[in-house]
Image (cartoon, rainbow, N blue to C red; front, side, top):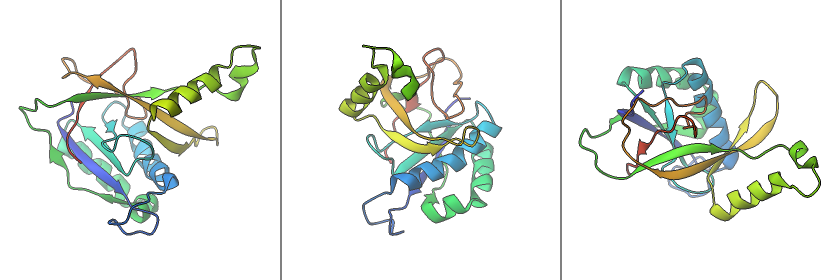
Amino acid sequence: MNPRVYVDLRILPSGGDARAPGVDPRASGLVFGAVHRHMRAHPGRFALALPDGRGFMAVLRVFADTREELDGLAEALQDSPLVRDYAVVGYPKRVPEDFDGPWLQYRRYRIPTRRADRKEGAPCRQRRIAFAEAQGLPYLLVHSASTEQSFGLRICVLEGAPNTLPCAPDGYGLARSSVPFSLPMLPA
């Protein structure tokens, strides 16, 4: 997959008016859940970017290799009441061939479960939560269909460079430390 085309999903504010501030964090998570289901069904074809930067996301940007892949995503999302009620799907756009602007890498920032803090004197979970909050890492509230648990998916945003190899996103559309890739930072 190479990030050649993208589409923005604008999360509607709590009142349903796209001009008013105040995006509900649960709405971002619900819309992302619908996107994530499509990503899992088509592994490695879509990458996620968060052009808003920090906190709860008001725009989810999905990159793909071809316009046809984005059309397939749009078809899957049009039947979702979550997307219909909580977001506006934008028109697909092409990444400029000569893009020379900044590139960013989006990686999952893992926070261990509460059970990981059972060791005396090694509060890994608390340390990672404190770091994520201090850095203002963006996150999405998601619900796992397989474990029936809800959690915050924290995302670490790092400076990147244009890709020399094809991208291999994980099931969330994010880079991994073992398989890094970057996405162009285009205006929202």
